[in-house]
Amino acid sequence: GKSFAFELAVMKIPLVLVALPDTGLSQLSLYIKKNFAVPVVYFEMDLTDMDAYATLFQSLQAQDIQVNILINNAGIGNWSLFEEKSIHFYKKQIELNVITPVLLTKWFLEQTRKDARAYIMNVGSLGGTFVVPKKAVYGATKSFISYFTKCLRLELSRANVQVSLLTPGGINTKPELLVLNHSLTGISKSTILEPEEVAKVAIKGFVKGKTEIVPGTINKMLHLLNFF
Image (cartoon, rainbow, N blue to C red; front, side):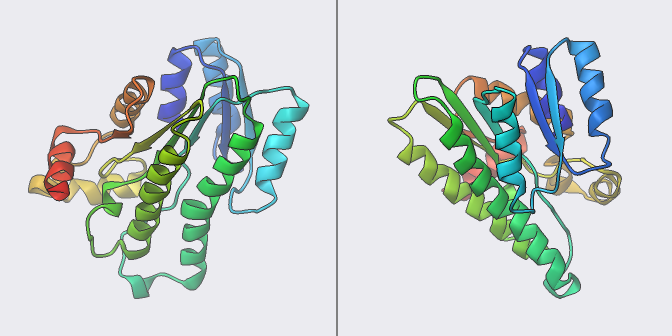
């Protein structure tokens, strides 16, 4: 999310950032304002809270802020056998990975103007394309995102809305993933990318109007082979 924000800020696009409380969002917003000279509005909220969507868009409306780009990036991952995680964890994962992007997209489309170009990018995963042990529920949520995005693109093909799907491999987004990914070897290790690289490729493809964006040469090859 931070890498996406930086890439958009470089393009002088005003930002609305959303993240959990106490995750450094206020400091990030201030940094972007000072270093990129773009307006930033931020909301600290839990997107698994069903009331959060209404609060978010009603607050934007009250401030007369029209949003024309939506990046559905929030999500929870894991690397564990199905029986090792709790019911509470899976409920939270499904809510954030599936329900949140669907409802945010619904709210987003309802507030867009018909005469203005709108853009949606949903973040999927190669984990939703391949059958991967220890990613049973996570992979299923990303399969949902892929299907949802492709259907939405067809439904909105005559509307003034561009819909893109980002399908990355593994990303070093936090310390525990860095340690796990560092232990990988061979092809598995070559599929791992840094978040800055993924964001750069994603925004570049997004701007060009690509329907599906797969960062990384090896990942592109695996995705193509799987298609065949």
